[in-house]
Length: 353
Length: 184
Image (cartoon, rainbow over all chains, first blue to last red; front, side, top):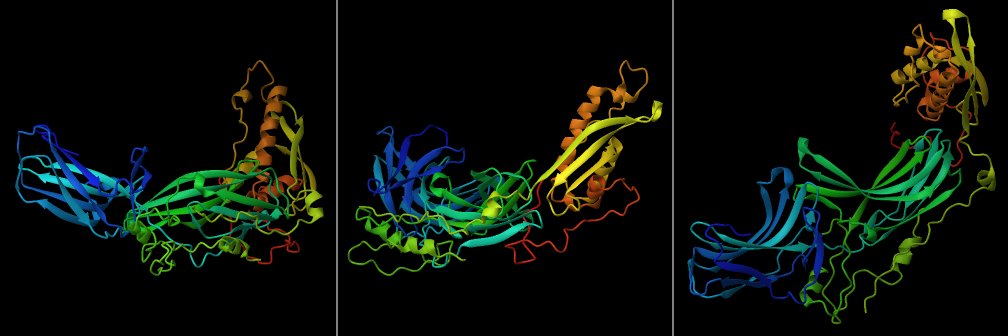
């Protein structure tokens, strides 16, 4: 992002040292487009170079200083002027002087804390970026490079099922059950609806995933609800004693982890909404919050050592509050997250009866 | 070689259904027919009544079958009572057709056959929509409208509860969290 004044005399670029090996992740921009950005985790070092290319090699560039910053900020759309920076690191690359030829300046931000996940929402945006600035008397030359940060968690120790009986006296009684209360982003919601009493004429039943983005505090709280998914689970009229199964694969939907009170500025929470619709289009519904979390990838031998450490550091960064602090990496470098081959089967059979 | 844990997607255990529940009549049977319009009276004191026949197996209704005669203003009365006392959004009635009641019309006005048929259909839709609404089923005015010979306009408005002897199988708890109230 540069300012137009006398025209650009220099091209500024920010390059990462591990650009070849570092993975990229897709992230939605504010206008809905999807772009790929370098993916970082909490604790990883951000290192690279700022390269200056003089457009006219004979002209020298006078400047008041060159620096590079690593910034994590929250921007509320209704209050664009104020950026809330929760991470702000700066490295001076050059003192005021002259640049006579194209050159590159190395930088390294070691083990940067990136406590929150990148998020672009309806009313708020949280982003991380590098910003290189060449200060000048009249207009600075600025170049920004966005990166994407994912926050990872492990399988929660406690993940009870959700089971509840709800209804309208003498008209409709159902018992619904979801196998877990916390799901990772590629998980499957397995559940069932059991009809205890049906005295209304039901036409069909669906389950919706609702995302609620909350911005603001105190009296100025604003909730933005967005139905991410609508999935019909039953067509036709059930009778007493029938069980309708639910199997909803989350990987097909655009979901983020649950974010609670991020830097006291915003929250993103997810709800399952069970909706029954009767013959006269009346809707009966029950909303239930579920916690979504992002599972780290299996550590592969090809991943950089740093990324491997980072993907297993969870102190204080998980929304679940229950992840363990893993010990040091074993020699094989193949320290898995708590994924044992039969653990999911175990969890699957733990049902309250 | 990546080794992703495969999620367990097996169905949750459920109780087998009782066959009498599976193949028996559903507990939500409710049908109301409006038919047999008849114009009574003479001259300007004429009005049309309709037969309102109800068949149901819902326990909240005292009679499983009932048949009464009602006129358009009775439906209006019911609509007003429900709008005042219940929280539901009451569906619209077919029109009042005031224009048809003006003199010097070429046709029979409100006693025109086609008009009566149109009105009959509208009233049938109206009453079925209302009677199936769980909140409306609690109102005394609806029960009086459907199952009592005459409407007592001086009645005491109130709520109707299901008979005390009725019990719901499988529901041990008396108090259940309520499904959020239906809209419309």
